Length: 443
Image (cartoon, rainbow, N blue to C red; front, top):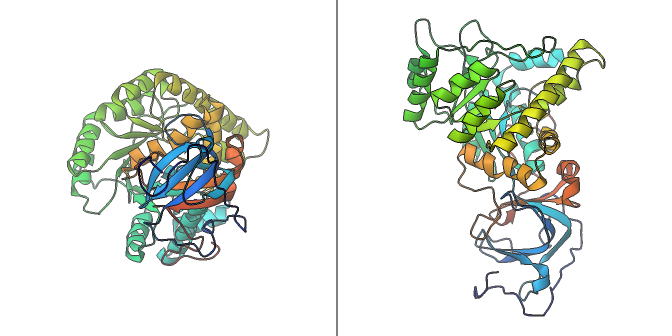
């Protein structure tokens, strides 16, 4: 721990006292058998690699020490160590917990038309069981926070309230409730329209539900057969600006679904907090986002998931591939311009599965030129900022001792995220049996 801390210290030339666990660590089973798991008990971890979430590259062979539920120190193992023998995590890469900044918990992501129709008109208890199981899938992959972009029944919001009543530790769900879209335009699956003769700003101001953010749909969706087709904005620019102001007066951030140059431009001019998707938004809008520090959630993996559901060689598959390539190119340009990007998967879209889609999204960022450290920052620190979490998403002294461990070196991260070996929060392991009210074993 920190020099002079009085609890654990580095030795000048003693070398590291190593501890070899008697069993291979698994989710929630990484502490030594019989060890004290009080949050105030010091602990140490000898990590093979560490990505701190700041955007820096991986550090090799370091010791992370914890006390009082917070990170006390991170230092090279070669400096030597005295005190409590650390857990031997030399086979693992350690990184901050991840955040999925765009999901739809009420949808499964499976491309089964019968199942999807049932999910669009289900009984609440059916949905609660399966949404709760999807949260467990996030936990198993080290994703400890998600932002739900809305559903027509505000079911994710209701689950959030159940979740708070059940008080399981370790997971954050931010819910938009029901999104806003213009009557007769795209978005009915995810929300509702303002009442007749009611302006969007009036509707936002009058909505008394205890939501975490306002979701506004300001464009249509992408065409798989007419590449580059852009839809007109759904809302008048002045009304959109007034709606964002109304949300901000309530202390609520605003996420805007927008594809195409004009819908994105209007959302940025309105002062929204994040642009969701942003296909075909163009470089001028990206430059504005960088200047205004508006966060972009590109959801590029939606096209990879969609591609997997289509017949190879079909016009639709070719269209999905072109959309994917174009969005990756936009990501590359956004990186060059300094746009703040947060990782979001749009899980629940066809072919985009909850939890596992994060590895696809981060892999596409890597393909766009983001280095590994930058990619982890997008999935941790930037996501934490967007969701307003009280945890920075960065591993540094003084921060909450929240971290995950995956097998192997950082180069294998996108594969190893499927088998996260440990999830720690406040210096303690989360149990793999963490349950929510109504959670099923399967789902």
